[in-house]
Image 1 (cartoon, rainbow, N blue to C red):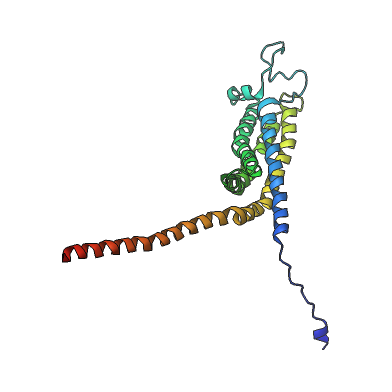
Image 2: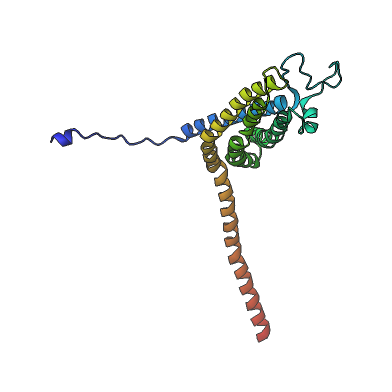
Length: 239
């Protein structure tokens, strides 16, 4: 009796309603969309335009000796990959420019296509991109945007050297980007998959079923037509 009294009843899990599932999916769709927009801004900011000078003596982006004319990182890094002291900074800019463009820019486009209710291809591409390039590319390729600044910082002997402040700020900003992108995709992609399976996949299956039904309906008609031809041929032979 005492054993029976001490038993703990475990409440059965209540299945989610479709409305609750859709609310979860909408939330993670929004979070991934925000991440893709921020990363696209990061692509422009840290891959194209911004270099933070260490001090007034930092002439990294200067075109002439008096530094009245300066270039942009997007024009500087191509010829600076073999720079004597800032080659890692040049590689960092190249890496951001290339891989943020290949991963986050398409994801933002596919997210926008999905949100505006484009043909099913938008939802298909968004689901595919989040599940593979966004998830794995965000974790692996974006990780190097933290590694290159660390290597650059360790290669400089003083905090007052050109490139030090820029590398330190990039390390902080892109670490936050890497973590946010990775976490949002790891937590969110199952909900995007579920949304795709519930909305788009059934449409594709229904279309396939309709094609099969049409073929099955057409087959008896063909058989009847062939039988009629055979009867006509037999009548002609008997005449």
